[in-house]
Length: 286
Image (cartoon, rainbow, N blue to C red; front, side, top):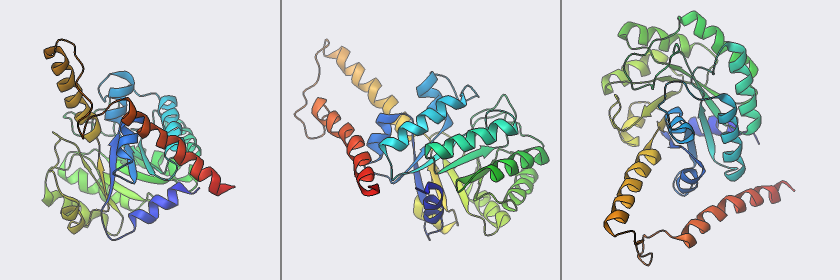
């Protein structure tokens, strides 16, 4: 299946395409009931897979393995993967992109940060010289087949943001992302800078960017919206609450006969869908 072309066609439609951030197979299983596209965020993956902050700990084989598991369970969902700076030099980045494309990823985001890197909404980010990043980006673009490539800049100085956005828009990248955009006015300025190139906007709770509805983003000319951490942060709050209540109840589990309660039956039914989706697609292929 041409996953990249399917995502590219979705992005070209006259609305803002939402991709929801998931961090493990269970969160993806729940998200699949609500959204047609996933975003594998570095923040969520570093937190769930390593229990570490998003500052460059991710190893590319772990990310490829996660993408493979996602694609098997969700054969029709769009799957955009954050690959930070490509995990090293340009040749490593190209290898990772090819492995992810073979694993069934729809697209990747490649940033221009220097290591040690940081979350796109953190302070203290530093970026590669533009020409060095463009050289890596162009090699990655040449190494893909139909994979969507999002060119991302983490520049923070106003003149540099616009300079880099214009430069990225001139490449063969499919989409441009300026991370950590601080205002609606800056979304407009970036939209003007990239011309006709599709634009992606990243929203993260507690981040530097404003919280905007999809209809607002569509009016601003944003083509894709990624939500990096809604599942992770919701799980954080829900788990903390559930365990606090368990202690208060002297270790007695809550009843599961309420309409919104989750027990063994509900969880098993959710996970069984991951098997049936795969068999449905395999059956059509035959």
